[in-house]
Image (cartoon, rainbow, N blue to C red; front, side, top):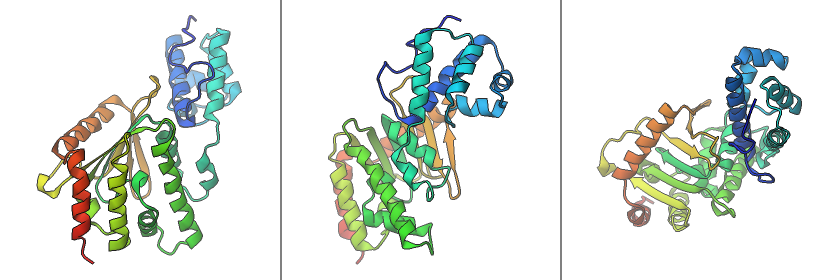
Amino acid sequence: MSSDPGGGLPDEGASVGSAAARMMLGSQLRRFREAAGLTPDAAGWHIRSSRSKISRMENGRVGFKDRDVRDLLDLYGVADPQLISAMLALAGQAHTQEWWAQFGDILPSWFEPYLGLEASASRIRSFDLQFVHGLFQTEAYARAVSALGLRGAASDELDRRVAVRMKRQELLTAAKPPRVWSVMDEAALRRPMGGVTVMREQLRRLAELAELPNVTLQVVPFLAGGHDAAGGSFSILRFSEPDVPDVVYIEQLTGAIYLEKPAATDHYLDIMNRLSAISLSPAQSIPFFQRISRHLQT
């Protein structure tokens, strides 16, 4: 089988996040399988596994054993040593242990994949209906929000969940930070989580973050009336790697939905664009934060 050793793979020595690495490797393996005219069942049988595992591998939802990658590439007729080496290097990056592994005992299994996607994304667009996005929360605000879903939890667990939110925020000031464009409903700003003092601190924090060159904040005011995202919050993550598709993340009470098909992601992107169009501009949103802060009831 003839293959382009550079197609869709990072340059030699380049590093990508573990989530992006899994998705890139899975996408390549799917392309090779389809080019070879093989079914997921045949591929699963060849590595002593199942169709469902091949599906999870191709969707970047699991790690990769070197032996499985070698066996699949052999089955698909990939013989180029440079390409095989690049694929195995990508499999190694997919196994990289990220910082949130130390919090594995308190993080829901459905949330950990999001942390990987967030850490690998080059652009994050979000709409938040009830609370300020986790990337922008102050420690006190994060504690108040976390406590809602952890009634009766030990203080140590609450501390660690707040620590996860604070650690996530290092993305905003990293050497190569993602471009974050957040639209929030006015309701999220009017709800005084943790009390008036905490909320005023949170609103000041939003105004400060809005000054970062990679952060854009907008507010959908009540005066805009109803809007397309009345059903709830969501995030759209985009990646610089061409083989990694956009992902829409929708969090629910006991789980999360990850959407990757273009029809779904394009629909949410259209909603996001319409939300931005009816929102206050970034320049208008900063004084809006300050105005709400002054009007909070003590």
